[in-house]
Length: 401
Image (tube, rainbow, N blue to C red; front, side):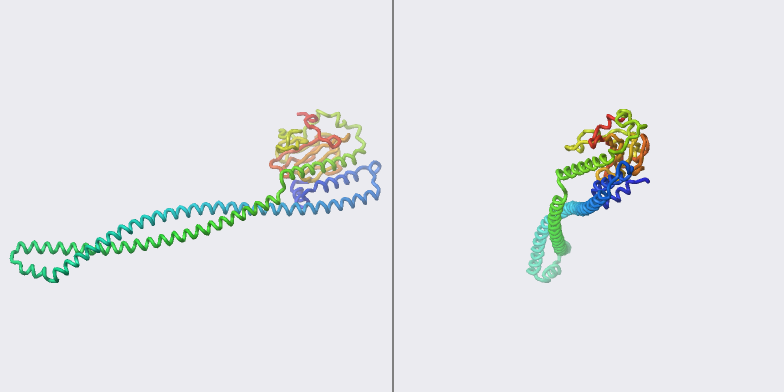
């Protein structure tokens, strides 16, 4: 039956950290398929094993639920933090725009204030001139000018005096009109100044409100960071968890190896050790991670090699053997393990699909899986290990290029 990465991801959602359960089940299946004459378990041992398995399932379910809750909280906090940071950026931009508008209004108010002063000076001057004209007219008497004109006998002098009085009358009229215009302009300027001041006050209030919101956002951001810091594990804790997973895997692989050690090798098949250096790589591809090199710039080292290959490429068994594990494993994705006898195991991780099941016998070159990126990998490729008595050995010493 073809087992796909999607199925593995479904199991991942149910059992985060499933390697213990999966490998223990594989161990039981592997032991069960051994012929009865070579691997017979007593009923008491079987009952004890089932009880241990049931307890293990409960423990894994409990741990998986706790991990799922923490991951959900972490995702929620990250989303809140993102929204907070986006809001902070938007508020800062709006704050800058408001400051620019306030500066512009202040400059305009300064200009209007200066213009108002000039208009007030002009109005005062015009008011004084009009007052003088009124006083002069009052002093001269209401009709004295008319009397003076009627009593004048010289026609030329009369014409000049009429022109003079028309000029005086026009000048007074123009002066009065200018005074009225100045007063109107002054009123409009004062109204505009009041409007500008109101707008400035409104913008000041808006800026104050935005600043308060900004401070609240900053406070919320600090709280979110504290929550995330308290929720997420430190680098040391993450390394310790990986080391624990590795030790658990090695321990369970040792149990698998011990359970299958009683299998009698087929005399017609070349022993695994005799094929050293002549076996073909499980998939064609470039080696991107080599055995023994530091992993993720940390203290841990690669215990196998990683081969870059196209998704869906066929993965072949490197030698004759029996499938002892074919399931999803935390950190390894869809994993297939083949026992080749003599204490040798080959491991094929991060597959897209598994083409074999536990108990299947395979020959060298037989398809066993397809290349994928399961287990949280960023790109497709095959992670490949060879182990002797549970200890990893460099695959490049066994497979030919």
